Amino acid sequence: MIKIRTSQRTVFQIIASLVPAGAEQLVVHLLEHLDRDQFMPVCICLQPPTGSHLEARVQQLGIPLHFLDKGNTMSMRVLRMLNALFRQYRPAVVHTHLVALNYAYPLMLRYRTPARVYTVHSLAERDIGFRMGPVVRSLAFRYRVGHVVPVAIAEEIRASIQRVYGYPDPPLIPNGIPTDEYAPDADRRLQWRRAHGLEPHAIVLTHVGRFAPPKNHALLIEAFARVQSPSAPLYLLLVGGGELQEKAREQVDALGLQARVRFLGVRADVADILNASDAFVLSSRVEGNPLSVMEAMAAGLPVVSTAVGGVPELVQHGETGLLVPSEDRDALAGALQTMVDSPARRQTMGAAARQHAMEHFDIRLTVRGYEQLYTHLLEKNQRNRS
Image 1 (cartoon, rainbow, N blue to C red):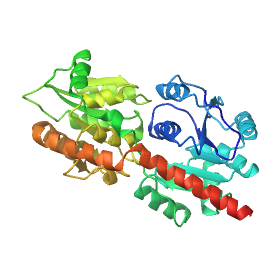
Image 2: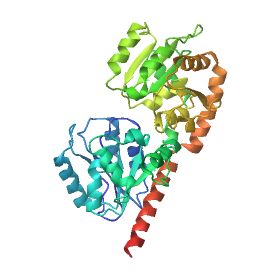
Image 3: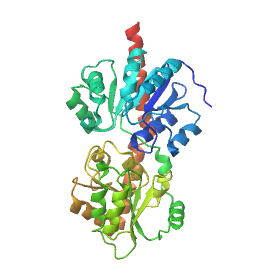
Image 4: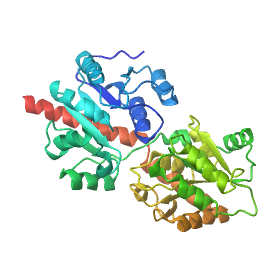
């Protein structure tokens, strides 16, 4: 168990839950890689535990992990519990994500937290939330009450913060991943395929993401139905859970794709699944700076994606993947067919994607960016108090 010092370097990472998704993975990566000589992390989830592999990962690190059992509505009880944690640890840095800002904001002001950071994981127009969300964000970012720093994870998100709040110069710290964990391995590839009934020569397309409206699984399934592979078995693997999963299953059944589309659910072995795949596909309507694309590229996969959010900042069209317009079924189907028909192109693009990921997406770059921001804010606070 890590001993947490109630010192000026204690860092709160506060998020709604650790259900596997992009923002939640970033939190876990920050907890894993923060320099413990400088910062002592504490993770706080507003909601009850879910038993996810991300929760287990934090617990294995010995990092304090607190659950506040929030329901679906704003809760004064949760605010009181969070207040008790602020009083106990007196954090030097409070780093919030998504809805957690609504609860942490008044406490950061009350306890005069030296460094206050909020990562904007989507376009500011979508991130604004509802109920207390617009009020809190307007106070924090438009009127600068409390000096909470909004961090953009992509250039498009950075521009949206400036557009929505008039915030002049928000920091840009792109997301990152532990690229070493996704290194291609031929033996592991064959083992995973054999264990899951996939032929060694099959062509496997994979999507990782929650079954929710922004991900637009319906478009992906429609496009995949138009892709043909006369020379090898062709599969689409759908990794994730969510409220639209059953609807997606119904669509697969209606199109007669049951033998070609597999629903794998929420998984802890995403790296192995990507290693066993031939290309990655994303059909989203909106995105921030998707970790799933970074993971796929780190695994040496070419990416076929809609050109939304920060995706064009990650994927170089024609070099590491193919980008198509959002909501364009035929363009998406055509790009997938290109990948299916061109194994040499898949290999060339995949190798370029792996190289780009190692150079630009490694989590150590992301963590270094946040450590530098934390240190800058702490030093600025110290100067202001002198």
